[in-house]
Length: 312
Image (cartoon, rainbow, N blue to C red; front, side, top):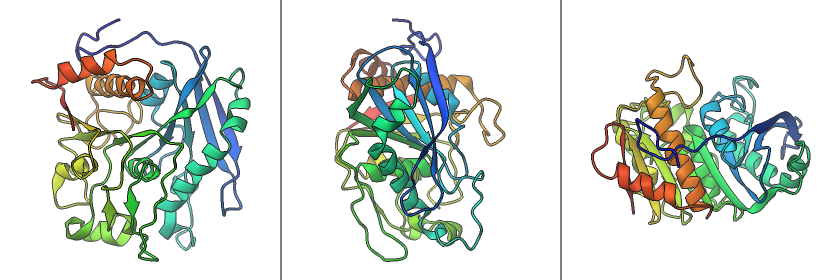
């Protein structure tokens, strides 16, 4: 096992991968199809799946530092371009806009329904996907999407009802720099433009989860500052872990890509930390190997220059 010289964590050698895009999945309730990207290792069987949701305005072409890392270390990573993407550019009067959060969840459900078809569309992947080991992950808005799939309740701003939209096929989640609870701590901007953040209930999430938060992530959505993005950990039930990234802002050192203008805290060491911790967690929660996660807990529990890992 190779140990990264800066993070002190396991950093195994990558394997060859294949990526296919765009694959198309019928989008529930929409005339246009959902465009999907699948990345997978060239070798290996019974491969676990990471269903990854991008942040607001992004697309399935982003987050290469995470997607490429996970797929080169034994995971099938599936990404979609959701309706909020700048690439789609919904008109201001589009009736789907108030329910963008819910359309994202429907997108993920549609992908899971068509998982065998998607796998068969990737050269050499047919029959190599493990349908019983699926982890939802996402950054920012995508973190909420991943959370909903494992039990996060969001009060629909149109109906006032908080439905259970979880999917039993999803066994765990990874939420990166995502939203906390709503209520009076939301800014006026968030209440007006992102009404799906007004009331979130984390108490129903029973699946294991890893939350990643930057301690310098000052989003203009809450008056509480960076602590707001730790709510998915602090307000959830047990069997959760929190990685606090020291000095990390919203893009956590550059997880959406190298030299991307939206990254205000570009730092390759932070990205390496998140790559290695998330891979260790994925391998741990999927039951592949627990040694990397054990190392991460030991190295990041005491003082470490890059971050702190805690669990409950």
